Image 1 (cartoon, helix red, strand yellow):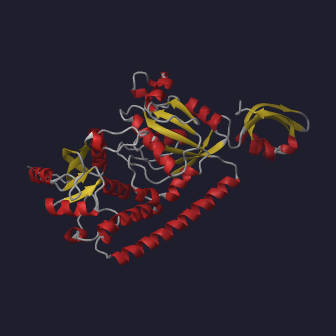
Image 2 (cartoon, helix red, strand yellow):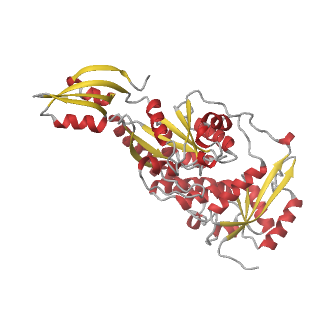
Image 3 (cartoon, helix red, strand yellow):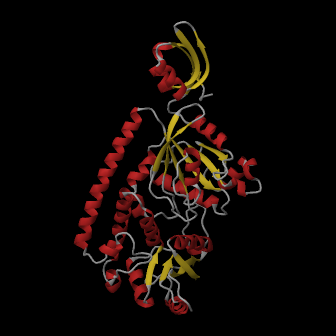
Amino acid sequence: MTRTGQERAILVGVDLKARARKLPSDIPQFSPEESLDELKSLAESAGAVVEEIVIQARTALDAATLIGSGKLDELKDLIRFHEADTVLFDSELTPTQQRNLERSLDSKVLDRTQLILDIFASRARTREGQLQVELAQLNYMLPRLTGRGVQMSRLGGGIGTRGPGETQLETDRRRIYGRIKKLSDELEGVRSGRTTQRRQRQSVPLATIALVGYTNAGKSTLFNRLTGAEVLTDARMFATLDPTVRHILLPSHRKVLLSDTVGFIRNLPTTLVKAFRATLEEVTEASLLLHVVDVSSPHASQQTAHVFKVLAEIGAENTPEILVMNKADLLSEGLHDEHGLAQRILGETKIRGNSSAIAVSARSGKGFDELLALIDKNLALDPVSHAVFRLPTAEGSLLHILHERAKVLSTRYTDDSCEVEAEVPESVRKRLEPFLIEASPSATSE
């Protein structure tokens, strides 16, 4: 059997029998097969070749090894047959389970959380992102230090050894605690800096819109289409980790800030949610959320439900939201049956009263004019109204403000003044209030 340069992995999942499951009734569930399909995508995103997928049916999890001694023997044979480097478990392993499995299998054993942390470590590009990932990895590593022995001092490459792993695995608890304290302080500084930036943005009434959604739903493609930016787009999960903020201009000529955030995923590790608090505050402080869903995914309903769950955990469940059903061009009903698509996606999910829905294709741009109009309609900050201004002809800068920040409908010149009819944001209207001669109620509230 010829070896390749890629790490070979065996995936292991546990199928608890129905009577043993404790499933929240309000969250649509992935089947064990669907969950392992997602784990396979994660493993491939981390650079591994998946050689085999194993599912163990049990009435209860084995406290010592999760899967029991019989399956453990079968797993040893599969490791030898495939010459596997790594065994990836779809469940989160306790420190004891991980130590027992490593001793029995004589192989690297990682759980789903460690795999996600490893992907985050390889994707982080900014200093902030690297700090956040390292903090999450060290917090997860602490209870797993005892008894790891040779593996803990391993300096080799591969999944689970990126980020701080290559240097921090040989340190003792005292040094790791010190490193965690230092990282926490640095991230608190980042958080303070973000708060200052947010206050500066809020001093000028520019609304912030945050893109949220399940990983690989097409958020970055949508972001690039809306802003003309060149954020990395990739079919791999968590291709974009570091947040990006850009201006966009709405049909009403209001300028808003659009923020691209990290993708969510089922059972997002608690250590990551805590470490990425500063980044996730961009979501909690947003005036409007664009919840991007890959409508072509057979798991769209479950993915949407899990995003709702994470939004509730971070305190953003009451933020106005537009459900952006992306990749609708890949379906037979496509962009023509928005109501049916929304009903299918939100079927078993608790439908949010502050949600609107629209079908788009981020790749082709179809549905984007309608999306921008819907954003205009749903955005409460800096509402637009109809107004007429009489500006001195010598004040060309004021006319420039109207053309740049408002939607000018007509312009009439006299000897010493210029009458401009426009749909203007509230901020512009207040600034030009001395020149206002006629006003109407907000156009966006109709």
